Length: 338
Image (tube, rainbow, N blue to C red; front, side, top):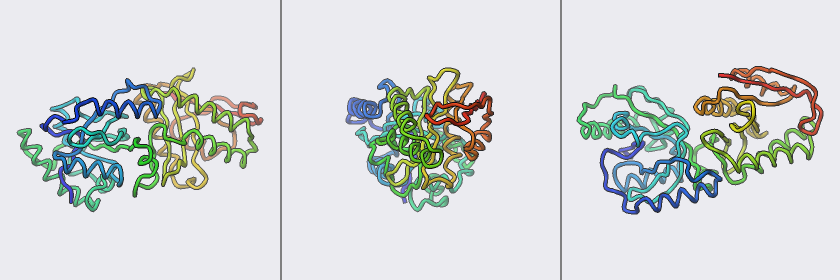
């Protein structure tokens, strides 16, 4: 069983031997390949408090099921710059500063240690993945952290819980081990083609759309991906076993408020309950990004999608015959406002 898991560097450690240059170059290469502005903020840190633990845990991210981590809130309050940030990017390194991967924070919560649940322990992906194993290891580690902070350990101490998704290297992000379907934020290789293929195939079969529609999706999605600003825009992909099986995007540069686009789940994943968390992830991002209004365009007859939109607070504001997608349908516009 591994012990000593924390979200950010402990209170003291030797300076990384490799320095910042290696991390900066790694981040620059990721931004180049992912189409992100190189000035996008990021943090860099290793897991754990020893070279052995740092290596073991980053390997669990790259080649195993680790998609969560936890730390004492008191440590973040002592070192605010090291605290995880909503939607924040991180370069995870070895203990000596060698960069290994890029992750992005997907979820943050704070609660007393005693209230951490079995689902979170499972997502940490360490030991036997049970809550009992997780709690035993973290109590030992947090006791040491408390001694360093000069505070008493208790199960009532608040902890910072973080779920994240692996973004880079791309091959590891696309084909994670023992993770099941994941909602991964940001572009991955093949995303534009997969989004166009899912839309083209489904709407041709179910609604007689044709080349015009598929080409429009591909062109507009490519243009969007080439200009994504992570402070304003978002793209989320449903990924499982090396395949992209769903997508949703928020275009924050659109006129009239943010535009929700390309929301689809592939045939083989439909009915698995993936649509709701994908839409929830997109709308949670809109709130954090300060988008006061969000709109989407669709057409009559897509009842399952309409129900999801309405549960998220969207309301239909217009409906009329139109040919925006190359086939005449009853086009609808839905809007959400904060």
